[in-house]
Amino acid sequence: MAFFLILVPLFDFSTMSIAENYTTILQSISSEVTLIAVSKTHPIDAIKEVYAVGCRHFGENKVQELIQKNAALPNDIHWHMIGHLQTNKVKSIIPFIHLIHSVDSIKLLSEINKEASKINKVQDCLLEFYIAQEETKFGLSQNEAFEMLSSEQFATLKNIRIKGIMGMASFTDNAETVKTEFGQLKKLFEATKSRFFANDPSFNTISMGMSGDYHLAIEEGSTMIRVGTTIFGSRTYSTI
Ligand SMILES: *Cc1c(COP(=O)(O)O)cnc(C)c1O
Image (tube, helix red, strand yellow):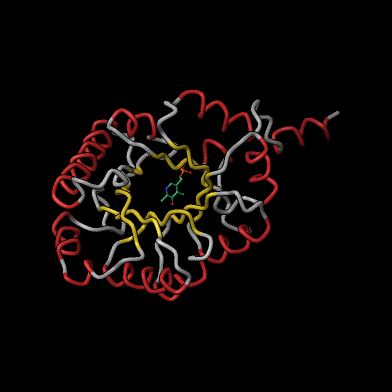
């Protein structure tokens, strides 16, 4: 018996399955908000559990992992690239990627356009904005984004479609800070829309909110949340 008691704390007896976690979140949010299950670092079998209860939007942040998972899973999955994307990796994801959330330069956008044009695809993208106080986050400032969208080079890109914006709040327990930052993102969305996409109904996406803050993000106008830990549990980063 002592042996058994020692083993008990090593197992995770959390009461809900991965699929139940997903369904619980889905039922708690408006049907107008897209729930992306962020499956990075989690195995194919975990993705299949969520797929089995209807999830078709999955998010990954590493190109290699994305390619492997895409090859191993049904092709009606909408894959979202949510991590920093290097230009030399663009080519390998264009054939299947649904939405690239992390566009942060004209150089990257041009490369996406080039690879998409080769296969006659118009690639949906979001502009990643920088709002958090941390220095490590990628993303554009309003000035950088407006400069890019006004440029002659941007006007020549026919194989990309900018669907909206993406951003991350500071990693903090301070709900006021997070709320303020999401409010800033929403204002950036409105400003970008009115200046560059006023007549473009497909510019309609605000990707903001993760496990710790998606409720606040939805209150501030998010249309797409990216949830990993609350669905799949914590990440170890040791294997795929
Ligand atoms: C990992 C990641 C998420 C999900 O984070 P959780 O806190 O696990 O929900 C969302 N967005 C981006 C950009 C990520 O890299």
